[in-house]
Image (cartoon, rainbow, N blue to C red):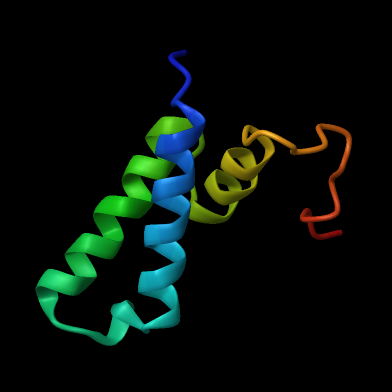
Length: 75
């Protein structure tokens, strides 16, 4: 699997979190589509199938991430 560059992952995470904070899922069809596109790109970039797993995987691939830290995972 190809690995996305950390700068790309950082940008995608920031875009997704910004759209989520702005409640894009309740916005216009274009804004909802943008959120879906960013989520899809994160999933493809991390080899996952859902956005929650993609965000966790992306964060673990960023510089300074502690690979043994699974505190973001729910029990």
